[in-house]
Image 1 (cartoon, rainbow, N blue to C red):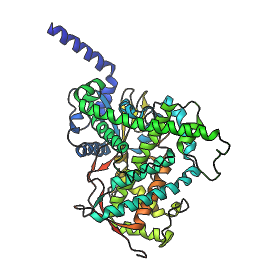
Image 2: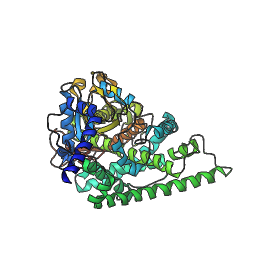
Image 3: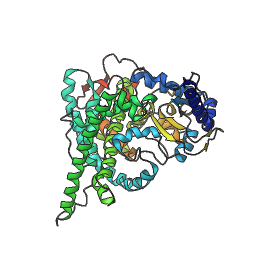
Image 4: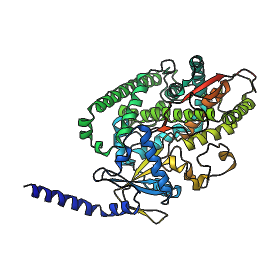
Length: 501
C-alpha cells in the first residue's frame, strides 16, 4: 500500500514539474548562488528578526547587479524574480498591471482598495480617484498640513524636555491628523491622544503580514490559522477595530452630506475645499459603504505611513548630516526670515534644496522598499530573457535606488545635490512611489505634506543624532511592509533661538 501511495505522489510531482517546466528552466537560468531547499526553496534565508529579513532582501538585490539586474528567488514552489534594472522594470510595470497573488493577504484588511485591487476593479476606480488629487485641491490642503505640523512642533517641545525622543509617534500622528482632515473631513486629534487604538491596530496588522509573506509554509490561510492562532486572532481583532472605525466615519459623513444638500444654505463658499470622501461620494453613485471603506482605508493608511516614514528618515539624515541641515535652515531663513508665519502652498516651490533633501532621503530609504507583479502571459525583456506565465516579479525599489550603474560609485552616500545638478539616467531609476500606470496617485500629496512638516520642524529645532548614533554610518533598517529604522527614529531636538544664523 505504501509503495502505491509513493507511486501516486511521484506521478503527481512529475506531472506538476512537466506542466511548469518553463518556469523551472527560467529559475535555473537566473538561479541564486545559494541552494534552494526542497519544499521551502530559499525561504529559509528569511528566518530571524525583521532586520535579518531585510538584510536578505538587500543581499538578493546586490547579487542581482551581477546578473544583469534580475535574479530568481524560490519561495516554496513559487518563483519570484528580483528585479533591480530600470530598463527591465519599465517594461514589467507598464505591461504587467496585476498584483501578485501574495497581495491577497493585504486584501484581508484593505479589501479591493486601489493599491491591491485586481485590474478589473482598480482601473475604473482610479479614473474616479484621479481628479481628487488635482493641484487645486492639493494646494488647499497645505493650510491643514501647516496647522497640524504646528501641533506636532508644540508636542515635541514638551517631549524634548526629557531628552532624546522617538519621532515616529509625533510624525505618524501628524500625518494621521492631516490625512483624516483632508480625506474624511474629521478632526482626529490623534497628536493629543497618541495612543489611538486605530494607529496601533494598523501597525499590528503590518507586523503580522510582513512576517508571514516571508514564510511560504504559512501562505495557506487554513494552515496559518491553525499554527499561528495567536497572531491570527490578534490580526482579526485589529482588522475589526479598523473597519468599525471607518464605517462609523463614512456613515456619519454620508448622513451629513445628505442633510446639507437638503438645506437651502448647504452650498459651500467658493474658496472652500471638499474632502476626498466627499468627492468620492459625489463622483460615483455606485459606491456603497464597502467600496468607500476600501478606498478611504487605502488613502488614510497609505497616506499616513508613507509620509510619516519619509519624514522620519529625512529627520534622521538631517541629524547625521548637520551641514545639510544648515543649508536647509538657510533656505528657510531666505523664505520665512524670523517670522512665525505658517507655511503656505506658495512657499513650497521655493524650497528647492529641502525638496532635494527629501528626494535623496526617499532614494536611500523608500517607504515601500518592495513591490510585486504577477506574470499572466510571457513577457520579453530587453536583455533577451522571457518571463513565463506563472512566475512573479519582485521589484526592489531599495536596490534600484542604490544601483551604482544609475547613481554612480557614491550611490550609498547621502548627497542631496544629485537632485539639483544631475538628471536621471532612466525615469524608473527613481521610483519611491512606484512607477507606471499603477504608481501612487498621492505622490504630490505626500511630498507637500513632508515638505511642510520638515520646514516647520527645522525652523524651530536643531536636530541632533540620538544616543549611540554618532557618525554617518548607514541607518539600520527592518522589514515591516513599510521600511522602518531599528532605532524607532530617535533623535535629540534643540530649540533654535529667534534670529539664529
